[in-house]
Length: 332
Image (cartoon, rainbow, N blue to C red):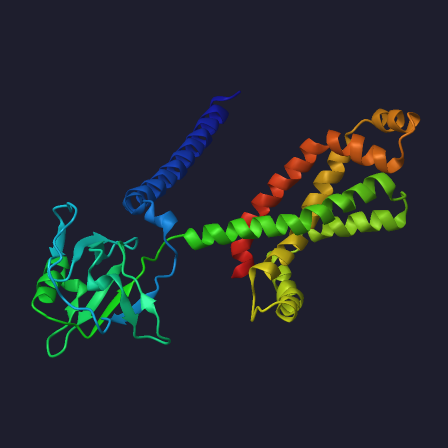
């Protein structure tokens, strides 16, 4: 190899190393930025709270008012407690990084324990820990806003003998609802997709004749795997949503129509994976079972399926992963 060629190789190799180092450095910087700015927001509230914060406007019940509500438990130093109203507030940071005033403690006999809803419909509202106080409006006095801080809100509340309305909200920004909905969606989709998919695979591999129609069916199943999720979503909107509205009390898209749509998406995966697991079962098992007098059905369900269980389990795991991955795209 000539010196010129060696020099060119070293230059190209250096450029390759430099580009690789630059790519890794950018990736590490992105990961570090996300970790540094997002780690402080990771807590159990992310899992235990719903995404949407529900706001309520409430008022005191007719027979309730201030009193003397001595503490029955010790509170943290950053909690400001009103003996007159029996409520403890503190400053906190929500999942979006904003400073808010949250309820830390409510005395069992406090008038805040049970409030009257001033929104649509009359119902009893119960103020509990971790609820965010937005404002407390008084008659003839300025409102106590959460931007003032918990200490100021408590002081303003202590100066009053009643209040006109209280606006508070449940804590939002969490993924609790999404987790629960996804679990429901997984269960419903598997209940629909697995029996149909496994049954179709058994028919195609064990019973269907090897002719043009069977090969056409397999080709169509393979084609289904390449259809974009948005097309399945439009199909669900045009077929399954009206069907569930007609058969149930639903008024729009719902979890049942979503499970039906996802079942159609999963069928190619379940059918192909199950069929491949059935093919790897040795034919000697089939011949031996039939030679011992077992019927075709007995051989399929007592010999073939148990030996193909690992492949069917793989199909189920792949289906669960597809459900989790496609549910958000299907909704939006």
